[in-house]
Image (cartoon, rainbow, N blue to C red; front, side, top):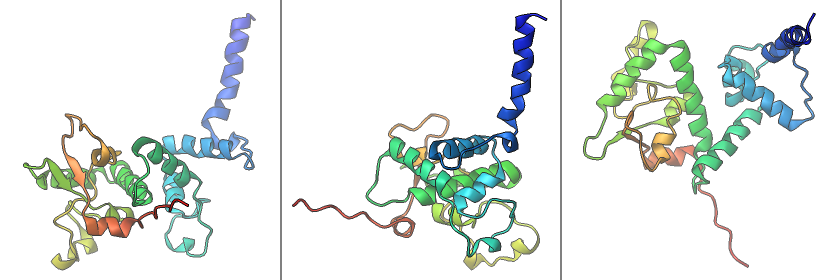
Length: 214
């Protein structure tokens, strides 16, 4: 057997190590390996990573209620926070954690409930302010999973008008919508800036205190 064929067979044997996470040996004491492993799983769009971002246990649990007394897993969230700081800089009011959770909820709807997400996109464009080229956006409710902009069915359709959100959009915004909040130049594919009301920003994060010079 030629050396080329031997190398090819060797590569085939190593493929399961790359594509089957259960076979990967991760050193949990090495923070870099742990982060790399979580980011790899996140690139596969696993629901487990959504649970990591929300701080829920991610060892097979599938409900909200089983996370009341659990320790919060913030490894992936902290990594995404550092990415946001690098891309958009540190702001006086730290609203990035809420934006990240809203990003993951929006992506979850795009992946699992695409029809409702697409209806939400139509609602997003219906709120365009043509003079300011902006769209009022509510990341607080999106981060909580309280969405609007699509036709509800079943028991969800019985929600009263007083509880419905009609002046601000939630689900249906583009994937990685944060760039449409902070980007200086908006792309031609989505030339609208997502604006967040001041009262919502107050709910999203506290202002950082300025250090006094001694």
